[in-house]
Length: 542
Image (cartoon, rainbow, N blue to C red; front, side):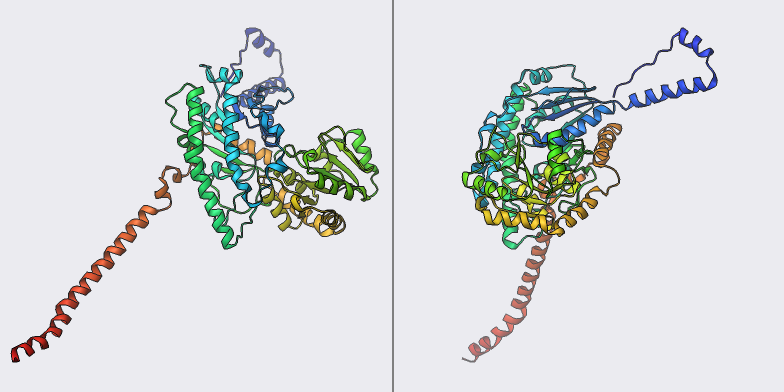
């Protein structure tokens, strides 16, 4: 942390002699406030190179708040932010240009085997990492011998090659997750991932799984964990040694357990209960702010909608304009017959067959739209940020998940009673119209989400305040090593008590073997000897 020297000149002392007691007290208090504020000022490096705007929304809210509180914040990301004091952007562009050409409807059309796309994400991580490390501004950071930061905040989501900065700077690191607890990010701080009741987010299971689901969940968890350690991380290690020109890099698997803090973008009211280590902090919803006034055209539409408004958006990665033709026609048919106005996030300039009650927009202020009292229904892909915003605003959902953890989010929303879910592969005019009608006209969905909204908001402190507090806690306590779990110092066989189990089984087997031999010896000595006596006697008689 940095400190400033406050210099009081002789002229200043002379001026103070002419002041009254109240003025002098005010000056002293002002100096104390200035020095107190500055003593907490830190230099923070944020590493978020993964090219997903949805991931950055919640993370940027935290980084900007830290800057507003006087910290010097430097952020590495794929998307620039509006200029502000104490905030420096380093942009890594075109790290995965193939993403823009991917039609996620086609890419994830694989039913139950869609979890295998983890291999694609690993490839994406390696590709984006290598391109990002070649960016001139990143190379400048890598080779800067005077690089000075107090803490790193890192989205450890298929961007592991940036652990090179953790090794270079040797300062505390805070992991931040764009969604709920991920195996790859949770284990490094000591959280126990139990597949018997913690479903993999790619499968869409609930926490109460059937026997068949527990088998699948366990196998996938094991394959993902082992595959990441054997196939993926060594290749990320190689990138670090190459671009940081550091052959002494010990490996990501060695550095990951040293994370000081793990910030989770979730909350117990919308997730599955599970145990966390003390340095795992839930901060879900920290990107949600008080609603801003809508643009005049949108405000007019929503104010004048006699029967209310339906908002339709599939997020920042899945594009509505990539829908299969049959699916698109279903939405056009159903929307054209609705009494409600529809706001549709559509990525192209026009929509052939656009109904008169549908308003298009390439970008729409989603959170502010959801806050309008005339908003009746949110048709969504089930992304975590969208789900959190809908819960916070008390809006029912029609979820149409496409990829990743979206199905898990949709299943939880459905189970909580404020949503219905449709499979985009089998969607029909009848199923869509029925779901929309049910969600709009049955009040229980809005009642359920408004109850959940109360739970989501009911916290000791707002999530953004909580996140800032814990970042500054790590700064105040030099990485807060007292929060670190001893589980991180155990080998895997020690963690699962396999060595203890082996000894116990060995003692039991030894005892059983010894008892068996003793019984056999007694049997031989006493019983077999008695049986042999008649034979001996008969021989003597002959």
